[in-house]
Length: 294
Image 1 (cartoon, rainbow, N blue to C red):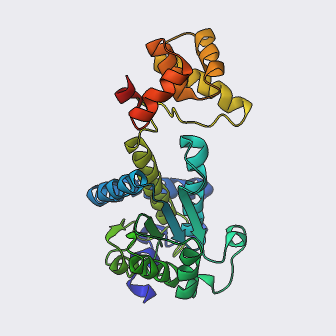
Image 2 (image 1 turned 180 degrees about the horizontal axis):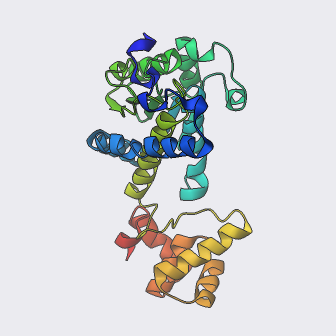
């Protein structure tokens, strides 16, 4: 089976990789990496459908759940955990599952990715339902753990999406939408943490970011739902208020304090010269969209 996967083929440009100078290695890596966005561009229409699916899921108070093994699973977990501080999303709104559990993030768990049952069990534990969207990630497109999860998700009437780096993937057969970014042979044969991993990271960024924009988590190009959990983020929130309301630092800082650290409310307070309570009411009536609230 592996000899049919483009991610497992040998790269003609790197047959003598071990004899190259450091500069030559870096140059060929850079050249190969530049092909990734081009490969992704061919899947934009499918990625768009995926984003619309996730937006609908969020609007129904459903969850976005990533599943994968190895690098693919780690990238899903990474994207999931970054949503909460960036977009102020509830912890359960975006989740990532890794074959073998979180201990597999730093050390491979032998055989975990080969079990369809483990994929099913992980989704059963969180009571996946028809309001959720499940995204299975596998560079090869054939990981049993992901297949098991997608099969189970379909049985629960959840929406299913697959992300792989080979065409006509096995996981795509079990998904409502199959995103298949063909990144081709790696410079180091079969090392899909390279171009394939880059492609998966970019696609996951696109899906989560565009979906959060679609539910009002962004105003202009500012992350107005950022969670100020440390000093740097507190200053970033004040700066966001400054930029969004086109005001000075002192005014932004004062609004930030009056809004109890809620950047969205503070922006409305400055722009509409209203109270915190009035700003909150407007945000509730506009489903969190600042433009609509204005």
